[in-house]
Each structure stands twice: as structure tokens, then as C-alpha cells.
Length: 473
Image (cartoon, rainbow, N blue to C red; front, side, top):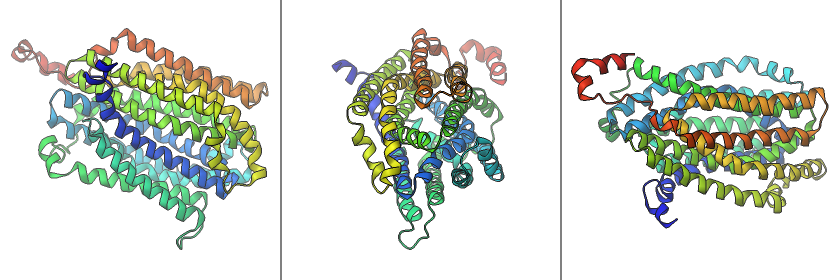
């Protein structure tokens, strides 16, 4: 263990990149947690509406976010290969793709009422869900911030990502307090205030990243201004590898959104309890997302350096730390559930909250079972994606998420009339099996020979023109 701390690919190197990303995602985890707590203080209906509306909106955005986020792998592999002049153009291609995403999300605004009418939720809940969803659609153009942040995370400059996220999170929480409850002279907007606070914070974050991206040092070293032109060859490679990543992300989010919508049919109390549980699950999950981003970055950099054996060591180091973190949280969820649920009870109606509390205590035991496998799922899927194995991840997600979670949950609720606890068995099974499948894929090692960037030509290829022909293809 001492050697693993000091060596390349060891704990220290992983933490140097991962810790700022973990703090970044933890900052947004705290923001989501505070947002849900504030809404629970405002009204039980606002809390129940926020999760399905937010997840439905995120479902539509997820394809674009997943594709744009794959810029991180291009930046990492170009950095490892010491082709810094290609880093700026790669980021610009992701930014251009984000324009499509922004326009798509804005086009959904007129459809917000229809989406929740189709879901069949309670009328009062449906009105709140529609407002929240409609405002969240204005986040669309800010997706460019995902590509701009990849410029820093892909190069391992994760402290920058951390500080920008902390600033945006602090702004979001402050605006939540002002706009949900009507403090500091602002009107009381309730759930709409929570949505607008998130929108404003994301635009501020995007503008900060853009300012840093275009700084003089980055313009000269990474071609961040001179590489603004549309590069069809590079854009095609982003589509080739990024679109499966975006599709996988979208299908995963869609599966969870459908799961939430199905639970909404069981009533407001089961939906509120599920939202409480998922809010705590996010508190555990998002730091692991930061670990996964670090794994993708390290794998990409070492693949670019032609050192896949160190990429493999980095992944196992991350897995050891991730599983250890989840074990501690799992024990806490089972032994001390009150400590995690108590913040939601302050300011809430005690009688209305009591039933949701009792159900959430049970659901946290489900989370304790699958969260350890969730760490494996995140780390090993991030590793193979960091090399370019995005199609396997996409098809695995399709088969497992829909075959083991969505379809069985639909049959359980709509056909057989099973209750909430039976439905939660399916989500638990999906995550546990997924973690094992990605571990097996990683151990087989096919990812070690993959690349998303162009390879340097051999002397023979330079002489006979074969390299130019292959790049053109």
C-alpha cells in the first residue's frame, strides 16, 4: 500500500486530480441537498415536484451533456501525447455541439405542460412540475460550460474546476434563500425561485470558464483562440466517440426518470420518500462522479503517452478509494439514518413528513446495498470510456437499465400492483449487476489498444502517404 501511494497511478496521483473534482461535484451535491431542504421547508408538494421535473429536464439535456463532456477524453489524450496545439480546437468542437443542445432545450419550453399531463400526476403537483421544468430549459445554452471545463479537467488542472464550481454553488445557495422564501427584499417564488437560482449560477460558471479559457497564456500554448474554426475531421471523431457516450448517459438518466415517474403513480407520499432518499443518494453519488472524471482523465493521459499499464493501476487505485468511501456511507445509512434525514424535517409539516420519513429509513437500506457496487460501476465504466470504449458502455446501459429496472418496474406498478419496496429491488439489482459487468470488461483489457486521437505516422507511413489516407478516412 505504501508503494501504491507513491508510484505513478497510485493513490497520491489519483487524489491530486480527483480531490478537486470530488470537491467540485460535492459542492453541487451540497447545492442540490440545500435546494431540496429549502423546498421541503417551503412545501411538501414543492419537494415532491422538484425531483421528477428536474430529472425529466436533465433527461433531455443528458445526450448533449454526455457528448460534450467527452471533450475531456480528447483533451486528456492530446495532453498525454504532447499535442497541446490540438487541445483548443477540440474544446471548440464541443462548444459548437453545445449550440445544438441549447436550441433543442429551448424548443421544449412550450411542451412542459403536456409532459406532466401525460405522466398522470396530481393537478397541483403537475403545475409545480411544469413551472420547474420550463425554467430549467433555459439552462440549455449554458451547456457550453461543460466543454470549457473539460479544457481544465482533461489536462489535470482540476483546482480551477473546483474553485469555479464552489463560486457558482455559493451563488446558487444564496439565490435559493432569497428567491424561494422571498428574503432580502425579493418576492417569494417558491419552486420557481429554486429553478431560476440554478439557471443564473450555471451561466455565471460558464462565463468564468470562458474568460479563463481565452487567457493570454492559454491562447499561446493551447491554441484556444486561434483554434476556433470548425474542424470537420475533429468534429466527426467527437461524434464517433462522444455520441455513444451521450446516448449512454441519456438512456441511463431516462431510465431513472421513468423510474421516478412510475413511483409518482403510487402517490405523493411514496414519491416524496423516494425524493428524500435520492437526495441523500446524490450526496453520496456525486463525489464518485468526480472520481470517475479523474479516472477518465488519467486513463486518457496515459493512453496518450502509450502507457496503458499505469492507466490500469490508476483505475484500481481509484476503485479501492471509491469502494472504501461507499462502505463508510453504507454503514451510516443503515446505523444512523436519522442523522441524514433530520435536515429535511426542519421547517416541514411534522404530520405530513412523518410517513415519508418512515419509508425513507427503509429505502436507505436499499441504497446501502447498491452504493458499493455503484462505486465499481462509476470507476470501471469511466476507465474504459477514457480510452474510447464508449459503444460497449452504451449497449450495456441499454440492456441493464431498461431490462432490469424500467420494464420490470412498469410491470410491477401498472400490471401486478406491487408496492414501493418491490420496485426498489429492481434498481438495486441493476446497479449491482452493472458494477460487476464493467469490472469484467475492464479486466479483459480491450480498452488498452483504443485511441480517440490521431496517431503519429511511422516513418514508412510518412514516406508512402498511407498516414494521410487513414486520417482522411
